[in-house]
Length: 80
Image (tube, rainbow, N blue to C red; front, side):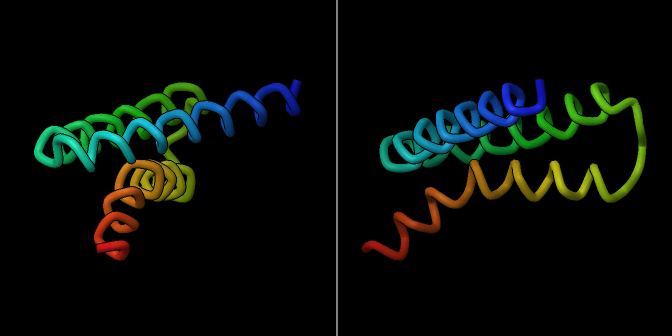
């Protein structure tokens, strides 16, 4: 069960990263809004699934959301 969840999380994260990689290159303004929505949504889902309000889980979900949604923009800036 844990391995399946891990595989689903990695595949989902990779898909979101690839989507944002394309979006940052084509529509940066839309990507910024989508990044905020996706990050807030991720934090909300994690808090609902864990049914906990601990700071560590919230911060970790926030960091993962930001890495997956904003790192493609940083890579685009570095490559220019």
